[in-house]
Image (cartoon, rainbow, N blue to C red; front, side, top):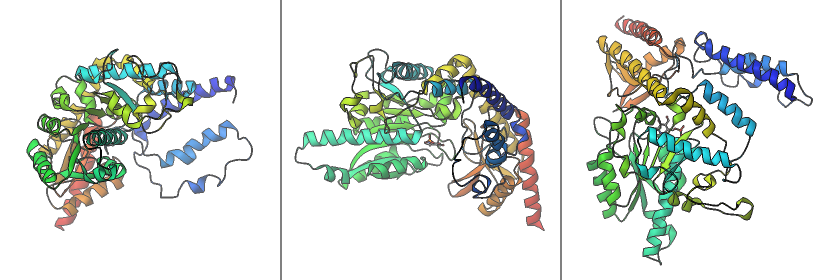
Length: 480
Ligand SMILES: Cc1ncc(COP(=O)(O)O)c(C=O)c1O
């Protein structure tokens, strides 16, 4: 493809994308395909000779679209949202064109510098404590990781390196394997599975602290486990608190957990993967109170801040602690402006070496929407969730499970788990809307997460109609 053809094909693709998103409502939100469907639709080896571009494009509707789950559909209410907006897509195109690998400042100065400044912009939008910002002289700063899972792991590995260094400095005879075998990390029993996985990858024990009736972990529960573990000779070193848990969007009490972590020399990481975006609104910022006690904080602008995947924002108070944990400095990666107040090399902050120019999409989105536009977007989703909540509350056959704080509503038919499993299966089989379940205190619960950028009140009303119709059928069948 030469430049002239790219100009033409690029415009065609923009039209295809605009049509796709404009008409997405007309597509079935969840596909009908069966496992292995795609292998039969394309050859079993790459073509020997070039194919016409028209043929590739024709295959999008034939091969790809039948197997797409339309996450951007206003009828998609599963998991949590994944961000999508036109300015973010345009910025990603540019990122693809620049095609740099920004592992160090020298590898592409704009890639590094824009990221540092965008993380400062976003940190200010959230009103993060000054210590988390890089500024020109700060000790802290932000980085874009690919996912919240990676941020949790990176924080755990940094905490592990920090405690190893400290304990070995205090007891030079202490061998690393001995320390490692005693390290223990904590999270809520409601934490995302990626936290448990970080413990597995990091080779440390990860204990789940029991949450209370609001699915939140408080100071008392954490302190109890810490005391027991210390008495058993273990070394607590890391605690991952969640703001906005995956099952029910519950909030750990970081105002209580934070001071305990600080006094016990435990690294506190905060995972606010979904909920974090809401903290840009002053009325939700109180949910972040206590972040001042954290060593690291992370959320996913790629979930709820109109930025396409991947863009997970992570901040640390002391960037030296993260850089120190992973530093490798071969000659071929060195340059004349290594670590200074003005410059960082992001390869030291993450697991892979390579990294894309992801801050471009933050820059485009922040400028296109402005803080006000982004706040409006969050507020609209929260208000749609409350609209759905009130529909559920008006129908006495259903119950709401857990508090509706942001854009997630957990609900169920009053009755057994089997009844609710049947309900969800029938709803998803109906293909009009798509949801996923969770367990809350052993109850099977349906999660209704407002996800789509274009979701409006009419979609919420139609979704509820669909749910009640199916619910009525199931209840009537039971009575027969
Ligand atoms: C609280 C929480 N943490 C972590 C994750 C994992 O996110 P990621 O896919 O960015 O690793 C999720 C995903 O929904 C989540 O809800």
